[in-house]
Length: 141
Image (cartoon, rainbow, N blue to C red; front, side):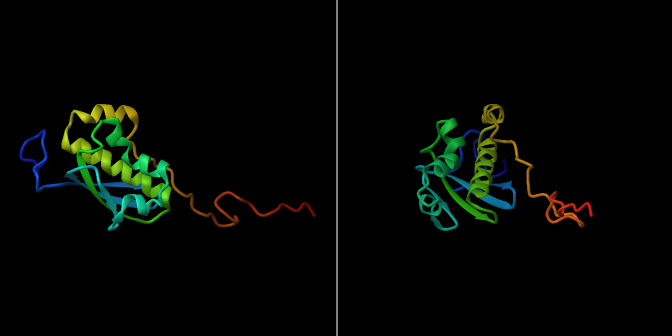
């Protein structure tokens, strides 16, 4: 909490930066006081998510849950993976930033599952197999 002037309020010119990951996606989220706008990789968040409302809502879900939707602006840099993996990485980054902003949010975010990193990722291919678990066809003779 080195860039906070008051433990409960974020200074007007400062920001919180946190990272979220999911599969091969890595998102860096900057949280500013503002009016609820968010940009992803320099593009409006709505354009980046191709106007898919379920993805946009999923990004803002931690903010909706804490009723802080119009209190913060977000600048997000994300790379790797597909849209859904990126959305989950962004969501984790936002939740972590909100926890650093105010520690009282931690319990409610944790109970709702926003602070849990999903460890599932692609399983590696093994030698002797065609894919991670798919074996070549068995021939008896």
